[in-house]
Image (cartoon, rainbow, N blue to C red; front, side, top):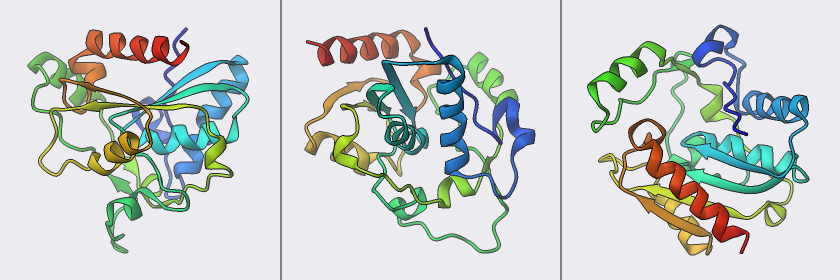
Length: 200
């Protein structure tokens, strides 16, 4: 069974976004789905910024999460925000909504049109809120899927390196940053490979 929660302030829940919407809001969004659906033995996948959300959820619902997979995602450093991880200053005059990154260049024209209609800005608080993990050593087993068609600035490089240095299960796929759109079959096969490797 697959659950794909939509975070407050984005997508079809864009109207719920406010200047106070933050990383913790999104962690609570996912925890609410876990509680409402009474989910256990979860393989939790965090994509891109979602690596912060997934780590926070895994920390707060340790008894429900079986494994954590970062999909070309940021691996947070305890006590730091995403902007701090990137060494990016916060513009005090910035709008509270951050526009989405460009659509990956290998996206088909049909998919690009479909995506363009659905993409929304994201609350700034998602990137400036610090993630505090109670006991990082007690997090569930972690794995990393690296998309090798990287953008020129490649913001995920440090997270990828941390995953490899930590000895996590690590896989690379020939796809850009949104493989759930551009290479869904390859992504599904890779996830199942990680799951089967993890339980051996």
